[in-house]
Image 1 (cartoon, helix red, strand yellow):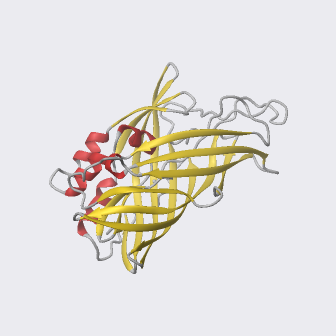
Image 2 (cartoon, rainbow, N blue to C red):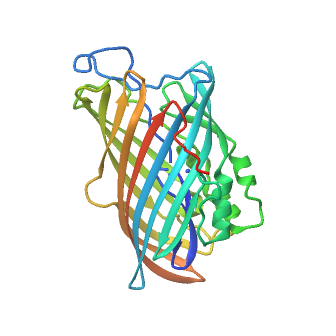
Image 3 (cartoon, rainbow, N blue to C red):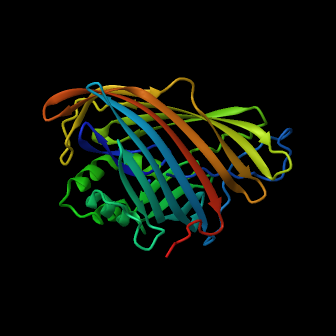
Length: 340
């Protein structure tokens, strides 16, 4: 899942869905069809699933961010780790239904020297002094479960069930609930619960061949993201049962148009644009064609731009630079070791 995390901007609490993952963070999968020679026949990356055969994912996202407000630099560094358990339930025609459960969460947020930590893999959560509401938010993520319906190749999420139950777990009295309900649009939920990143090409690819997938994530009052993934099949790794795929990610943020301040939000993004800073950062995906799954991967994103944020009827220019790296791993057993 792509992660849902709060951040600070001009003194206002901002809930931001980070691409990459809750980034709540989703992993990419692909599968070799047959045992063809990739140099002659090419590879076609689909996912093979077996009913009730669970698989597990770990996603670690690191974010370095500099926000300049009224000439002052506000820095934020963040590292979030999500542990997921996937269970294939059934296949009907070309559709697969799976459950996606959050097993555990680790979070470390440093906002200009103010550090907040949480670690569900420890008995006491390893929490530091900080925002009690934020700690409660992290705790309620644990055990959240979604039912996700994919097409057979896992190239598209058809629907996600369980979103309302997830929102209901936070109650209805606080502003966080109102913000989450606004930004968790159907498109946003589908992208959060997509472990494929739309990686499957329309036709088999030989080493050196590329293909693109595009998507848009509408976050309601927060704005929207247009994302382009360019995949290039590099070829088999020497002496390993792995295929290497290079990934270039281009991301553009567009502010909402004519959008009033949403209930529960202390700010409104009036206008502005963020886009990939320079050439798209390159990441890699390593696919194990014998085990028929992604072994590991790393996706990088750089963003830069300027926003106009309205707080208490006052417009403020905000310059932002952000670098994000998401690393992911897949396993037959849980990757979470609970510490006593």
